[in-house]
Length: 513
Image (spheres, one colour):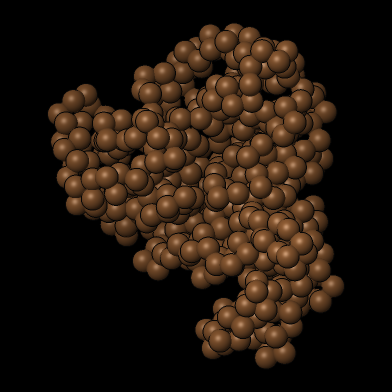
């Protein structure tokens, strides 16, 4: 983060301290404080007594220096709850108000500025987590994500947005960052250019992005961001927050009208200031090892003899002490660093075989199967707006499924969101759940609406729609019975669900009737 931005934002902290203490003294309502504090990457938790802080980490690249700061903060403030997010950020939870104000300043000075981490601002810029080391990628998009993150910071003070703006970069058709349906997405091509998608998003009235440009030279990307900012400010809805996201411009302008409006703003941007960028890369010049490693959590890199180690804490809830072990382990490992994933996990990249084996041992407490890599937002035990405790739902499901000892792949990864905000991207999950209420003869029951058949792969995108609701206590039972049916047929969910659509529908009806 440029020193200029740090100096620009530091004076804002006095207002943050003042309003945070006013909130704790009962002089501000929860909605009033939420509308203010989000712009600093912080929200009061449910109950209003404790706080969370979201650290922006461009492209999910957690360097050794930033990891050391995370460890230092956990120790200094006794932080007991840490969450990896689906926007490649780290959230500290259960912070005292007094500690929060000091911690924010320390984080900013350590290069982890939280300004705009929430609220109506450009959010953390995302990138494919293995960018630069992934075999088969089109090219390394991480440097461009970092440059974009830097560029967008200028709009924190300079522009009043209707709502938040999420920007993502994808290095391959796997589309892990959902770049084809973000507010603005840059999708790599084999010829080292980007296709640009805009005005997409999940949540209420979701929409896939509209392709607004093809084969854009990477050094030109800031022009396309400026055009999106100007289009959003001109045509975004400032009166109705429920319709203030970029995807609603597809409705108000029509898709063709939106493309026309965007390209007009792009032409204006091109005539304005010079926004051409030049980026450095992150070269990996480390010698690999000749011995070949195979493990379910090891990914061979495109650099011969080097590996990435995958680690997924259940639900993204990582034990604070785990950061200490990881920091100590990789401190002297040449070029090893962490990349956070868009699904609440991490990769430890650039490991030789010895280093990979050491890190595998340290991270054995994480997910052991595809199902255990399931995604869940922080849930209503902490979040003010959550309807259901998605973390507890996931815990119940993992506990029930582990007793069955299903083979890996029998059950798919699921996505659980506590509310319609889709923080777990439940609408793109093979199976997704969203907090809801189910009516019964005995009154309303805590439940989740079921989503089936979502997909985020480029060219195959499907945003699923809500089906009937399932009572919370029945969700683990549903998954266990589904797993047994698939295991009895010696299949995985991916193959079984295609052949047995009627059986799947009947099972869903059984648990949602």
